[in-house]
Image (cartoon, rainbow, N blue to C red):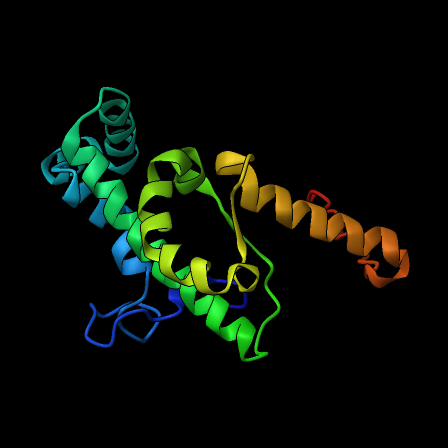
Length: 176
């Protein structure tokens, strides 16, 4: 869970989270809540989650106020999580200087920014240097796969002998 700010609780009485705690930002910014807040529950049930996210994106581009409200709520939750990261940084628990949001959150970064900024504005005024930079990823849906591939490639190039040599599986010979 290192670096997973979506599971740093932000509300003492928030909803239960599958990670084992409650009040996690994931419960406020997750796909289901964004679709629910935008009024797309029924659409998701009939058309599927990916189609519902595409519809949310279409509605955002069309200026739908319900869709905008869904991302503003998510932005506030992300801002609260960023405040937690900043507090942990001040306490010396982490040295996170940057938070990168990926996937659909990156796609909708400019729509999330108002909620994020509204949540952070007071603290930024008091201690501007103590807050991590919040950026939006550029790799989209492939970010996790690309990161995993890069990590494996780097490990192999750093120490080629670290990869075990596995003998080939025996080839089955047909019975006479």
